[in-house]
Length: 323
Image: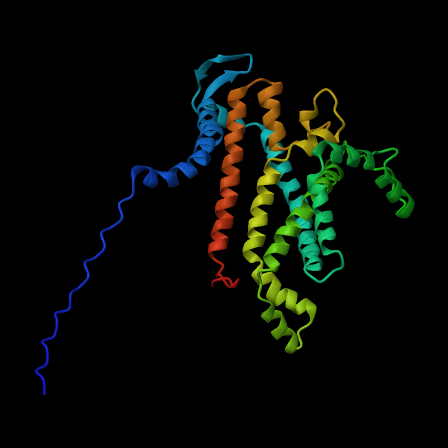
């Protein structure tokens, strides 16, 4: 027998040297996101800070270079101004009257579009068409429909229900309902497509299992669809709240012009916070007070967003609320 050769020692491979990236490679990710932050700083952050600074001064539109420090006087003025609170409550009521029917109708439309329909793409584009329509054109058409003497709505109310002519322009609640109907018509399809996208992420197996157990379509919608849409519903509520706070074009154009359209009717019955901001800033030329109104609107939106974020954190990923 031959003598076995000695075993060769195992040589461990040397660890690969870490790749050294150049300075350009390290900075390239920041370069890709830099345009967003530059635009945000120029058109978002800077106006926000400048508005806060103006809200602490007395600034007139006729003399922008002359500003006198007043501290919190502009905010104190808002607290004691009944027109501010009138605009605030008008904004809240218009937001509720327009948001609740809008989201309920959007939920129903999304449920219908989620089913197998002929020409489904056509119907999805059709529900989005009102969103792409001009605010001015839509408001003018609706103002004609709600006309006191020759409007189609008053004709239906008189013919079908036997009611007298309703002055939608100069009456508070009919006017707010009319303006809310414009908002509902424009934004229902937009929210319906958001709900539709969220519905299509729900696993089909859940519906198949529920159908095997004998659950009706309504029960499937209540026990499967709605829990899966809770985060999306909260998101649309936040977006609709922000939109209601910024409501401007519809109430401004609804009364058909006039010497002071920013007043929101003959008795300010549908003047919103945005219209009140426009009145103080550009009609009365008090830019300091207008800046205080803008910051008050910003704080209102932040408050609602924080409340909805808290509710969203209370919801588990599977759609069940934490106890």
